[in-house]
Image 1 (cartoon, one colour):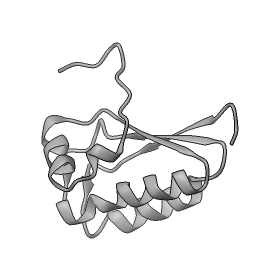
Image 2 (spheres, helix red, strand yellow):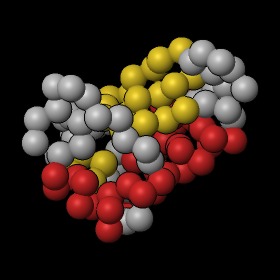
Image 3 (cartoon, rainbow, N blue to C red):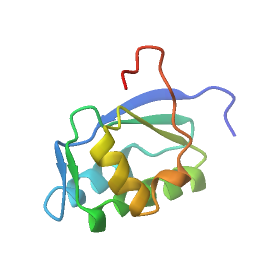
Image 4 (cartoon, helix red, strand yellow):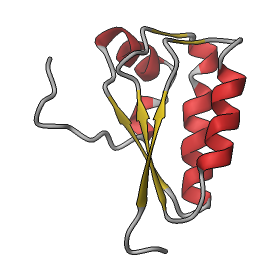
Length: 102
C-alpha cells in the first residue's frame, strides 16, 4: 500500500438519483486507483435518493479493494439522514474540518 496518497476531489451533483447516479459511478470508477485519496465533496448536494445512495458505498468498496482511500466532505443534515437510513454513512470515516459549520 502506498505511504502517501494523491488527493482527488469529486464534486457530487446537486441531486443523486436514478438519472445522475450512473454518471457519478462512472466518474468514481475512472478515478479510483491505487495511491489515490478521493474526497467526495457533497457541499452542493441537496438530495440523495435512498436507492441511489449505494453508488457511494460501491465506490468505497472499490477504493478499499484497489488500495485507495475515500472520504466524505460537506454532508448537509438532510443528506446525512438519507445516508444513515440507507446504511451508507457508517462505512465512511468522515473528515471533520476546522471550518465546518453546524
